[in-house]
Length: 220
Image 1 (cartoon, helix red, strand yellow):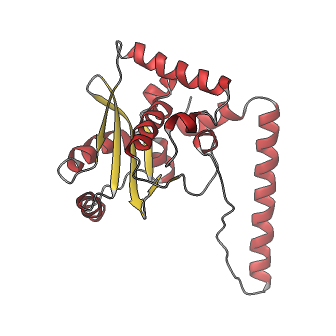
Image 2: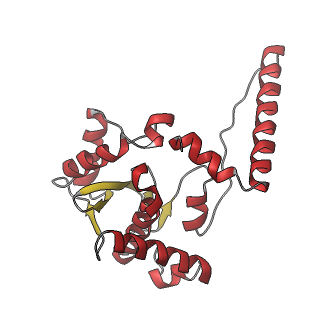
């Protein structure tokens, strides 16, 4: 993240840059001509961020289906406050008028921003508010010139593939005793993985994968 933002934008194809600009323009028009968003980083600002982000998080699929929303606990709030006092956190909220519609929460570890918690209100899904906020946040973070990397963490998603510049292999490794029970468990897990991959590939070929994902996440 120590390169200029203009240089980072060069990693996108002209078609992708056009798509991103169109999404931002579409949301700008929806908002009446200007986009409202806010950065939070000081200890005094984080309570407001937490309240607004929780408003969004509780309606996201991450929280409803995966139990992976912004934690609603005193322990998390204390940790967030401590990070803010040290200057080691960045929070972003995107608004529609005065309504929070998307949030992004990034603690900082060794000058590396961690893509920890994010979400958007599914009612605004057609305006790509998650993508819009990510783009605005990255533009600001590049301008700060305080960070070495933005770590999108483990896992694969179209969002991460779009915005990341590099990737590395990572894995969780488990050592199991060699017995019949564990062999059966591993064999079953392999069957489920293969079936899932075959199903995903087939849906992708039919152009239905993204639609099925939306149905699973949002019921639409």
